[in-house]
Image (cartoon, rainbow, N blue to C red; front, side, top):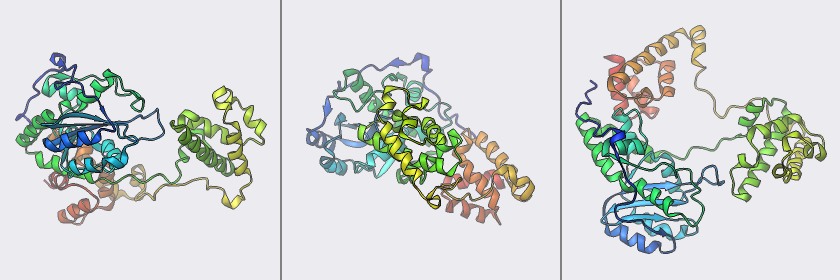
Length: 404
């Protein structure tokens, strides 16, 4: 079954040659002159190789601060979208074609915020996973398949800063330089392995994946880290979390740069009685932390004045669990436990036969759910997986894994 002999790795990574500069020359940053870039991209042909750069860990927002686009007949463009968002509508029209991306999830979300969406996606990471590659970073695939080494050192740069250095622009441009060639090579491998349709289904699922819902009570994470269970302290933590978020948004920095989660939780756990208690806390000794003492005390004092009925419950779950933890099944639901052992083993064995990761064959959550609910027949098994979002290729392969 695992016949991937139809393709080979073309290069050993250590023999790959460094790609130091874009082959068409180093592009300048496109901003107010966006119309020229749109016209050039429109005059090109074929799919768009696309990537984005954000400023995670540096800025409050997870927005795209740079968009890299490459198209045959047009070349590569580095677009700064900040401040020209209303001017991106013509670009959105031009980009209504296939996009080639690597690890598309976050890129698609940040581009969707700018009104940019594709009609089709090819994700080179997904393609590599379906072909059984152990390491699927863009740098590794470029080296192993194309014999080209891409730089890694600017991945965590401050992409919100301007101007961008020549080194940053080189790194950004090279991230889309090889995507067309990589897609062509991976597509051929998938075709020969009989898995091109699998990739198309997975890429379409990524394209249509909705924005994940925001957590209802995100501050609970800090409560868990600091072991906060007192309801008044939980209320303080909730108010401190909101105050910290407001500060972070105003300063355009990550909330944890204002105060780490665990410090926020520990401060609430102590339940300070006065502003002086907050100001003299060993948790806030640094000058940087002292600057916000008044806001921390305002949040804590607000929680002190809440009626008991308005305090948060000691425990909370974002969503109701569909079934108890697997480790409890043996005692209370032995039939489900037996199904789980069977499903788990079948998935591991069949994934190994296919040469792919077991979570790619079927997400662990769905493995557990089908074991918990059971099935009346092979058709019922397939219908349930389809209802829960499994792709047709996964259902087909799971049928072989369970019923062969």
